[in-house]
Amino acid sequence: MTTLSTFRELNGIECGKAVRARIAEAAARVKSKRGHAPHLAAVLVGDDPASQTYVGSKVKACEEVGFRSSLLKRPADIAEADLLRLVDQLNNDPQVDGFIVQLPLPKHINEERITLAIAPGKDVDGFHPQNLGRMLLGLPGYLPATPNGIVELLKHYEVPTEGKHCVVVGRSNIVGTPMAILMSRNANPGNCTVTIAHSRTKDLPAITRQADILIVAIGKPNFITADMVKQGAVVVDVGIHRVDDATRKKGYRICGDVDFDAVAPNSAWITPVPGGVGPMTVTSLLLNTLKAAEN
Ligand code: L34
Image (tube, rainbow, N blue to C red):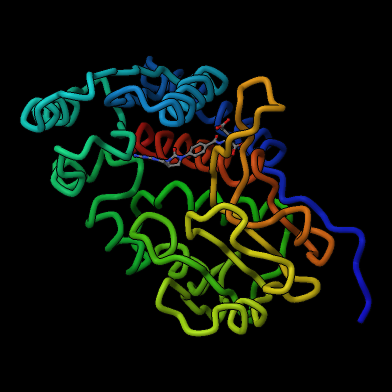
């Protein structure tokens, strides 16, 4: 067996920059046409440090492309009824093109109820059943940010997907399941033969080793090891974990679901963590917000 020592990075910062340059041009056109820039609002409940970081990146990305953004912070003990009232205000605010409620929410709040309350036309996360249903049927709508960010990444680097076996590990409503649908669609990227693997899959390594394209969203740090990946595979790591590391200034380091150092040498293409899928989630949110403003 030959060992590939050179792999290429699917770099979300680089790709994000290219896509955001196009978004900035389109934002300027929107602004000159209707007088105000696309406007994204983000609701952040509580003080989870990771959520603060992610929402912070979203606000910063808005500035970068000339969008207006509003960050609405609420305490962790906000009543569900009050959060629903806020959602309703945003649904009815003509100044806001689209908005998100950052997940996870505190335990006492029913995430499903909140997601369902967001007007589908403003649901730039693409989490509402109407948008997920439209995606399933290939109708125009908002695509879920992380899966669409991955599609954008594969497109940017011109990774061939047609006829490939894509294995998606994880079946969440916001990543694994929509990802599998997007990869099987008659589109480019797309036209894959897709397998969805999950916690009840038998002999997972035997399945993941069949993947030409392996997309991992299982939420376990360094879960995918070298023996689970075929030589020359394309590996996309959706995981993002903060693991304690006293040698780092912040006291932690970030890793994904894939053991990058072990897997990268066998891969043709691989996403780093950080700097891979995360920045593309943010970019994809900008794409949806632009779409909202154009409609
Ligand atoms: N409503 N909730 C809603 N929409 C979303 O799209 C999200 N998600 C996920 C969590 N909850 C959500 C995000 O925003 C995950 N996520 C997200 C966004 C950005 C990044 C990671 C996850 C990101 O930019 N990650 C950086 C590292 C950031 C760090 O230092 O921790 C990266 O390079 O991967």
